[in-house]
Length: 181
Image 1 (cartoon, rainbow, N blue to C red):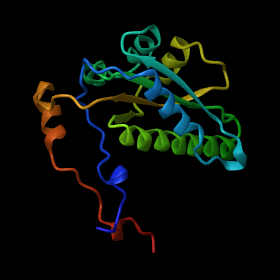
Image 2 (spheres, rainbow, N blue to C red):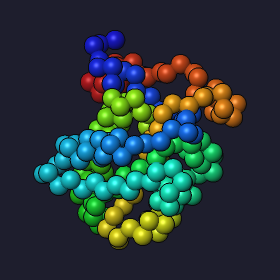
Image 3 (cartoon, one colour):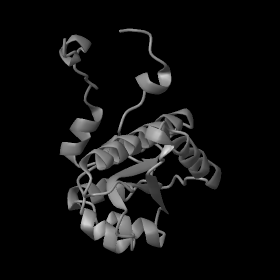
Image 4 (spheres, rainbow, N blue to C red):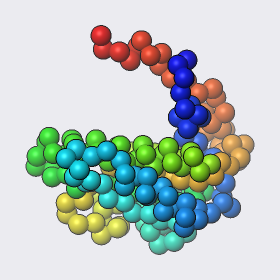
C-alpha cells in the first residue's frame, strides 16, 4: 500500500460506541471548526450542522429519524451531527455542488475526529423530511447525512449480526479497480 497518513489508514466507522463517554465542548468545537475549513466551490460554504449531545433534546430528535436497526447502536454515540446543505433543489448543478461541499466538510470533521481519538459512523439512510420537521429546518436546508460520533465501545455488546460486521477485517477495493482509465 502507498504511504498513507495514519489519520486515514486507521479511520473506520464502528457501530460499537462507549455509552459512558461524553464529547467535550472543546472536542465538539474542534470537529465543527475542521468542517468549517473544508474546501468549498466559490467559497459558498453551503454546509449547515445540528449537533446533539447524548440525551439532549436535539440528539433525541435526530435519533428518532434513524432506521430502528441503526437506533439500537447509534443511541450509544456521544453525539449525533446532522450535515445539511443550502443548495437550491430546483437547480441541479447547484445542489450537486452543495452536496459535494458538504461531503468535504464531513470528511474534514471525520479526519479531525480520528486525530482526537474519536470515531465517526456516517448514515445516509434516515427520514429526511422527518428530520427537517423535528429540527424545524428552514425550507432551503436539506439534510444529507447524520454522523454518530464517540469513543470506541465493546463490539461484543452488539447483536450477533452487527458484531460479526464490526470485528470483520476491513476491506477496500484495490486501487486499479477504482481507476476509470
